Image 1 (cartoon, rainbow, N blue to C red):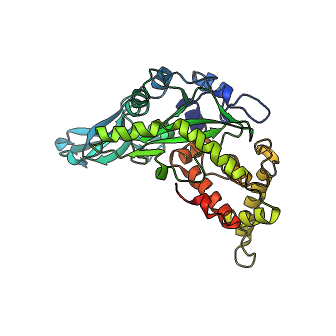
Image 2 (spheres, rainbow, N blue to C red):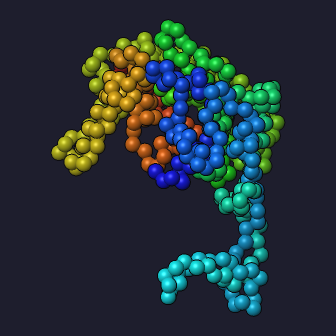
Image 3 (cartoon, one colour):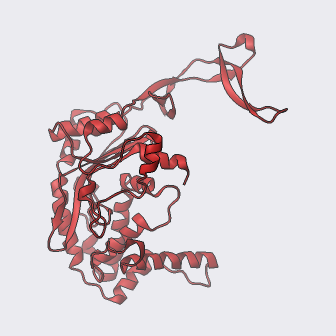
Length: 392
């Protein structure tokens, strides 16, 4: 991981409600990338908040710039006498080998009416190129002001906000003030609204009801049923009709479902916890989720990698290793399988690049939901319970 990426984590991500999000053993939550020494060196404030993140801090620290639409043009190399601009360009000096800057004469052609560029207002950094019909969903307007308006509050209870891809994407997590607990299972979680969007075309603007497990910091939706089928997710494309009144009503309905999500999660946790699974059934489920190939049919490397994945997953399930304390004695139940797979994917599974950013992107794109649903589908197959994956 490069230092630059580590700096981005200190600058572009805010983590709130840390006193309500505990590690196993009761320690106050801190993201693994927390680096006070680096922040001090960079002159940055602490990006961890014991309680909710003030809305003004999100604006000041993350959304203090605007994505701006600018015309696109072609720069055509030409003779110096025909140039109307000189483009800076770095080249290697053939004599010294040093990198030097020269200015190349170019002619700016007529801008295209079919394209627009998106840049940052604070540093003119190019983010994306879009067609003329693309509409910017401003981060402050869509992720903060819109939620505050719909929820009829002046101050949102924000416990997470960030700018993945250096501002090309953005998200804000708005939750209830305190954790919710199911005493029967001993599970604590924070239900929240995940609002996310992008200006590079990688994401539609999305509002969805989700939850995060307090002890293991796992992201959860309802594992059994898809969010879209039950109306707990709303997506808005970046078009001229994005803010039509009827569409705002859809967003309003999605945002008001946070408490229903909490109730639904408790119900589904209990449903899964009530399904007891013996060792044979657990093994059959692992064989579907992380299959071990026939040793004679794959390379030695592929066989070793599959075995390593299975062993790492079993370590999580049996509450061993770095995730010890996150399982909560759920082994031998369907809930234990779902918990183990989710924890493994969140904290152990090999990822390309930075784990925190990859986890955020999985959350935004609902990849953890898909993982939970695939896990429950495997359980339903082994236990002959098709009702587990039927849409409500």
